[in-house]
Length: 489
Image 1: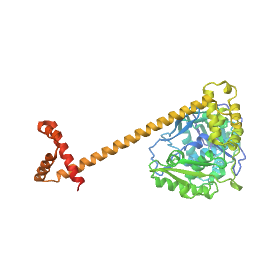
Image 2 (image 1 turned 90 degrees about the horizontal axis):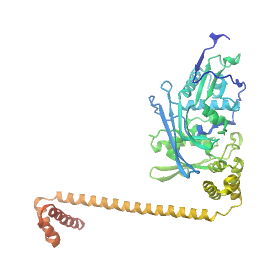
Image 3 (image 1 turned 45 degrees about the vertical axis):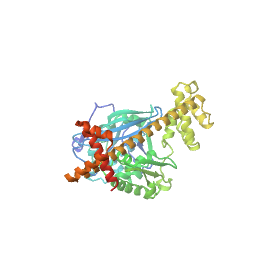
């Protein structure tokens, strides 16, 4: 090999490893409709879509919360992304490159953490023109992913252990780029490659991936539409409807600036929605039905998926589950069976039986110790009556919740009453002072004499004692008299 013909750039984080068996994927399909997406990468943005990115900014944070059935409480989740000083934070174009790398791994069945490619292949996979600036852009993206560190707090889903875990890692551990002549590869030694971080590769091997129409993704023009598509495609299921808090969706799931006014968020989101409706992914929905107001400045946004057909059909058979199906799977129910249960039984029934089994497991009940999944399936299919002890516990819990709610409502009502009285007192004080200050000295003397003439004997006695007590009593008499004058006009 002519060393002068090839310029190599090697970025290492670990010593050279043994050469794996898997080499260059020679034939890459011109279209990839049955692509894959990593579930954690689809849940949160990996870059900001702010129109005014600060070059000095090296960290972005995305947060939400999720209900953990096993603990019966809401858990806050956070993803913190830091960029290197040399290469900075990821961009939407870098996310496209990352998704293309996932497709390369999918084509080799996620068999090796090291994946071989040529720059020309990757450019074609991204549907970019093979021009000099695109090759530079590609290398910049790979360098950025080498320098980026991801900090997941209760936000990295470990499918094997079925937990939300903390994980911190670099996405890529090694990149080796040979700047050869496009795709004219004479031997394996002149091929570029990258290596996934162990955490990411483990997620691939554990099956924490979902179906994705990669060609459909590339056909979307805006970064907002691409991000919205990936997130919704994870959350949707057949016949599904999804509803999200507008600000949470825009800020924490799409990556729009948290400084954007509400009208601006709606405008950008509407543009992406229009694109997904035009491509027959979302059902067209009037704006008045799309956005539901929850209070001052609080809106929900509703999405309905259009049934897939024709060329835009997307593979939803495997890996497409609802949150309820996932909860069933976590107890041990097979995915296919979970899908059947959700499709054939009311959600309220499944929720009730699921809560029962979780409570029985918590108490180490012998009936679920050996086969909780089997007990759960039977209880749903045959609608087992709840045990009396469980009913009593549920009723007690409901009474406690109701009691707490009543107490809170009473306290809130009392707080509102006190605030109203305080506001009225402040307004009354202001009116009295304004009236008194508007009087001349002669008018003040007249008002004072009239007020004292009408005062109660007990008040006059206090006034005659003088001192602070006398002054306070006199002030009360004057305030009462002036209030009456103001009330009578």
